Length: 530
Ligand code: SGN
Ligand code: CA
Image (tube, rainbow, N blue to C red; front, side, top):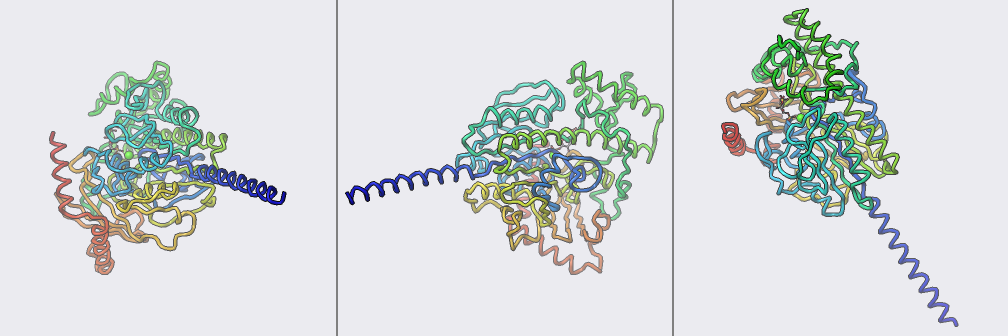
């Protein structure tokens, strides 16, 4: 009897521990966080209300910072689209992953973090702008834009098959994302969703519902809008000036029916306009026609014209941002309504920053703050305290290792970024004190010269090269707008020396050198010649 009792008890215990094990296994699986990586294109941090510039309201993007963390020093390694996306996927600098500019090919065969997540049991999706040729690898589902994408009646490539969707691109991209979350993924697996908007990329065509948004507001240009580029010859030679280079039809929508406003790029904008439905065109014209008439009647010149252009630009740019913000709201609401909020990491960022009139510019590419920086907001209720503010230097090479870290996957040694998981949790005791930058796409659109440089918390050293040999040094604490090049200033001799050392250290650390620069240059010149 005694023995039987013991056997029963032992069996019961065994059974119990068996159940416990199962429970743990399940809960461990559930604990692997989902990742929603939201990236927009050319979204300046200045146009996110959480950053406090006061230009616009982005309540949904702001929610990410309110419920999680706002990064004040988020940077890219190379301020241009396709290279930025290659860095994001690989965790490696451009000169290592090979995608140094928008024209060189991207090698999808190399490792990327989505492949690693997929291999470890994640469901993975890539939706929206990708700007890397070829079928995305590492994704169970992809529905991406060919090239830059189109604002109205956009084309997408769904798992390799091209189709056109009716409607407005930002909403279509959001709908595809929500459809994947709701109907396409395997719901028992953790997931990674890359949800990448085209907006607010040029040519800033707003959604019909936002045509009149902020219409009554006149924006004052930034203090350095009429910059004279003194002691900055590379900055003086770009072609990204709002006044000089913005096309009043192509960029600023002055497509008059009479065809009197003839500009270089008018015919390209006509094509974009023609993609709208009759109904959309009626609403579009009702808004723009009076502005066109007014513009014609005024015949603005000089500074008045520059300010007019700046305002036209800001209105359309900020309207396209509003649709992006709506999409973020829809995705956040979906996660909440479906019990996914607690265990999902949500990141909001852009492929780089953008100029909203600083130095008189639009576009990006330069290592100056507005384009070198990128917005970065992250929430993860399980680990990140609401209202966290991060001031350390974080860069887009850090995304891949961070996500691998959260997913519990080994970070391979050749990844160059660092996981910021501990940093954002408030645990990192040590963090880097300098970051490295490279830009290659010259000669090319917008005419920004090749350069590389280093930035520390306070200083920045830039070297422009190729058809120029120019150094720039900035004290960001005293001169946050980078108007005073301090290179060879006697008061900064030791800073300059130290920054040169830092630059050499960076190039050694990441494996960059003159031979690589030369190789990339030769390849680029070959491709652009064709
Ligand atoms: C297009 C734009 C440029 C922009 C590049 C790169 N011209 O060529 O203004 O700098 O993309 O942007 S457009 O007439 O086609 O709009 S990136 O974000 O893809 O790198
Ligand atoms: Ca971009």
